[in-house]
Length: 411
Figure 1 (cartoon, rainbow, N blue to C red):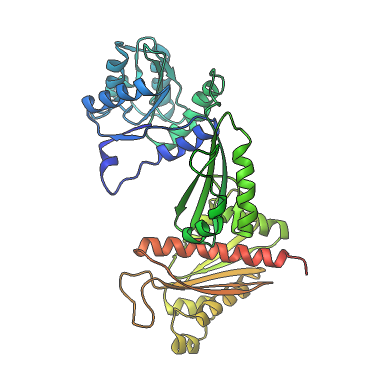
Figure 2 (cartoon, rainbow, N blue to C red):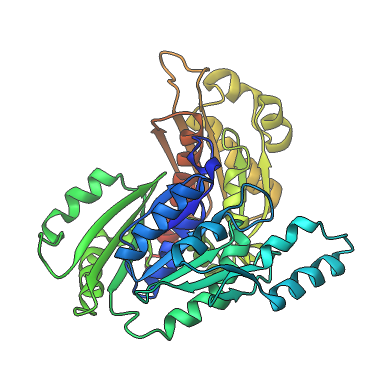
């Protein structure tokens, strides 16, 4: 995996393509053994591609296929494949037609996007102008060039690349995986609970523990020669961890599990967010079909908003402060009453970096769930403002999930 772009080497930019591609390749049984980020530099790109092609059967390169002077990926690829660039008539026709449909005059510099190494294949881009490129080295290894914008890259991979990989000889024999996603438990607690179930070095299966802002993913992998081992190991881990496991699907978050539980009960949840400022609502509404179980959220950052929109009594705020169990519960009750929903969740806390006191430190967060089963919990989250807010949203969703499980329990 080679991600191209000088901007990706800056601390404020994140490569979103490589994680997505790795997930898709693992689903196809293709292990990823090399990952590199390179700048928009011809020599560095050429060196990275050549080294990867010597080692790997498939090399995926994302980015640098645009029309501007810093988009150099196709030129480096042509030198690595030792093939001249030629204009692909079909690709050029698609590019011109796209500009015509949009009503724009096409700049001359877009013509470079139709240049494809001799003998390579142009991959149609249904979401943008830059076609992808599929080339083959002299050793028979495949070089796949994909556009940098994630929407274009993902659409091209699904439509053009994945079908070719599924039909390739030997693909799918590399690795098998099984996934558990866990909420409400720190990584160290999970490690302690499953320590005797972790495969030993040299065993057929291997286990990776991957934490991310309040959610932990356990990924069990095994060579294709042991196709059932990942599932067997995952079953044992799931039995040990119980209801902390919220899904066995890699790309699902806690919000997906919450949605299934609410939809099964035919109920809705309302939100009352202070320090998270709408983050929980954003996570919920990224789930397709969430309108069946979510309809309203209140972002009440100021105390006056808590009073006006959620009917939090001023006396509660004066006596206990905005960051307290009493205020969180009052916010949740107000959201439930105002919405008429069966469930409500409220979050209030101190995200920092300022605002803390000796008795209420930065990272202190109160979460309340009100419904057929009610809960309240206090946390002290580590990290900077961004991490405290992300952790608060995740743990609020997990507290709701556990209240729903309790409501569904017999008796």
